[in-house]
Amino acid sequence: MSTVSLIQLNKNFKEISAVSDFDMFIEDKEFVVLVGPSGCGKSTTLRMIAGLEDITSGTVKIDDRIINNVHPKDRDIAMVFQNYALYPHMNVFKNISFGLRARKYPKNEIELKTRKAAEILDLTELLERLPGELSGGQKQRVAMGRAIVREPKLFLFDEPLSNLDAKLRHKMRAEMKKLHQKVQTTTIYVTHDQIEAMTLADRIVIMRSGVIEQIGTPYEVYHEPANHFVAGFIGTPTMNFIDCELEKTQPGLHCQLSGGSSFQLDHFQLNEEIGPSREMYIGIRPEDLIHVTSKRENLISIDAQLEVVEPLGAETLLICKGDFGEITGKSNQARGLQWGESIEFEINPDRIHFFDKKTRKRLSPNIS
Image (cartoon, rainbow, N blue to C red; front, side, top):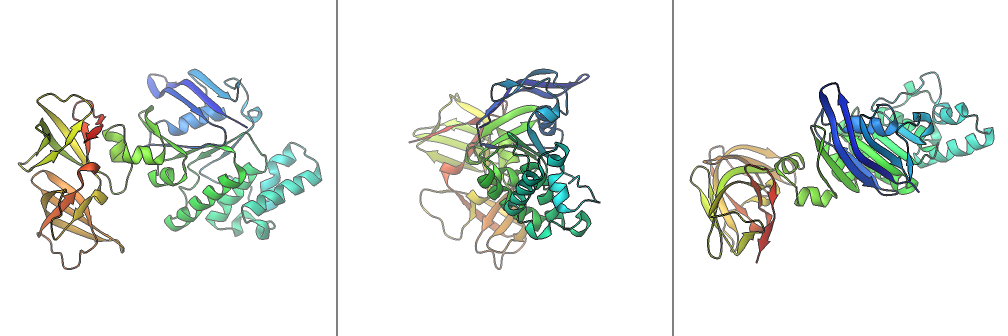
């Protein structure tokens, strides 16, 4: 049973603020992922928790114990790094059991714990091999086994899959998920890959420039992004953003896009007061911008000119340019489409996001 409290955590490097007022409570057995672009402070936060980086101010607690000044080896934390850090002259068994042997555990206990970890990670047949005889995925599992065998209060992962190729990363994501379900240890995981974050996390912490932009479940950060940055960072391909001006009408809103296009949103209001008119961004995810050949009721549409077709197998991405700028949509029937062709996209009004142009915050809809 281990909870983690990060209270007003700050880290400064001279005049540079790497992490600012990081505040979060992590539940027992929760899998939390810190994600953001390079330099956002996610690895620095992880290293402060591990004790590898001094804390400028704030508090780190595991359960009810403040660990700010506790030596890393005494924090009961296991950390897995981006590089595997395996001993090349030791076989898999000795690499996994190294920490136990260093702490002088009884021989029979070392044997039992090491073989149990190897079984969980499907390494039993590889225990006599040297690291040089292993694939990248196998090496990463050995590094994870070395962490598991200690049965720590907290797992910390610092971009552990970034050195693997795309296919192996996909496989290892599934392995990480299964591992957490088996071991049930509180986990904090750092990555720059938003797909890893979405697939692994119970909750995601999205960071930028040392500041938390949003904390939420994968569903919340995808469907209810807090602001323009989160909406653009989460999702592949990225969300489409179009400059627009909203005007209150009865019984809804009139949306005037930059370039001249416009549409009406009936029975649609925002919970926030917008005044007579207001400059906004509208955000539409590519999967909500669907190429159609015949118009359906209760949906709005916009036109654009086809520039690039990207077939992905089950679906096709259409990159188009309208008088409002470039947008990316999707089609299930893209055969025969030609460059320069006029494309009509339909949009479900319920799937449109609105962002204030000044504050960049998302405004929540009120659909009657």
